[in-house]
Amino acid sequence: MTSSTSNNNGIRVVCAGLGRTGTLSLTEALEILGYKPYHYVAASHAKQWALLAQGDATVDSLIDLVVDDGYDAVLENPCSDIYQDILKCYPSAKVVLTVRDSSDKFEASWKVLMDTMVLSELPFSWTFPSFFGWIPLFQYLKMIRYFMGTTHLQLQPGELTHAWRVKEDGWLAIQYERHNTHVQQHVSDENLLVFNVKQGWKPLCDFLQCEIPKDTPFPHSKTNDTKALKRLKRTFLVIAYSWIPVTVGAVMGAVLYGKCLNTGASTRITEL
Image 1 (cartoon, helix red, strand yellow):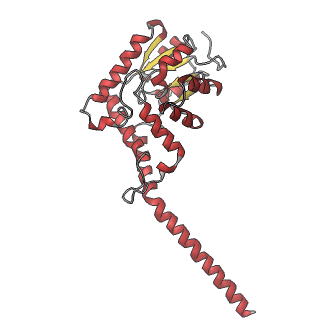
Image 2 (cartoon, one colour):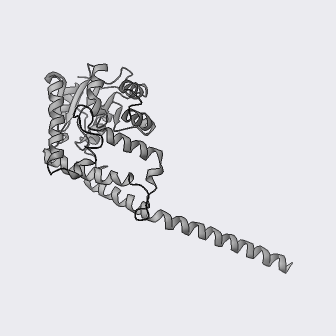
Image 3 (cartoon, rainbow, N blue to C red):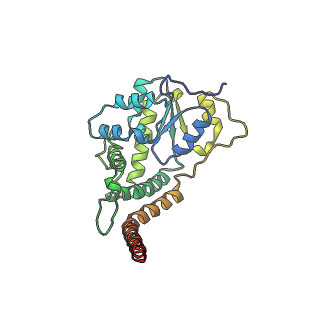
């Protein structure tokens, strides 16, 4: 077996798993193997994804955008929402379906993520003085989240990422299972690896026909685990509630500093 090296021949690996299934760990693993993975959404592509969510861009244009920027592996939503379209363009691509230990674990993790992300979507109010909604990137990401789940799952816009809050417990777990079943029914067994990142290098490298990296443990990312997301949520809240007093304090400080300078200048002139 030979090591993978990145090339310009398009998408070679499609991670069709939903978010919160170890996709960031797999991203880091693919980087070690020599791929250039596309995880979630590149910031420079966010506007184009938002246009797709609104029906003002085509799936093919998004795929071309990703490939033209040199990526040869795609992971997580919203790419997993269009995994079939990607495979139509690149039918020889290997498909990895990342999974959790159970559907209940997926549901719990998805809720933590979306309860964090929703803070970036809330409009400004005096009870929650957030400015995130004024930033174009956050506006685009909100549109993208409303797109998730609307393709083969045929959910309503925002149902997977927002409306689960009014659903009964277990509804998200069912959507996770529906998605995984869809992938397994539409990808041939020889071209599909159902993969839990806890399994480590061997099943992944066997599937991709790569050598197992020597003296390199399989990465298990903590960047966006539950603890990290809770810290991010606290950061969002601190920023939302502190930017006004900080800004007011800075302006008042500048005004007082200016008055001190003027007073000092007047004193020197009087002394002269």
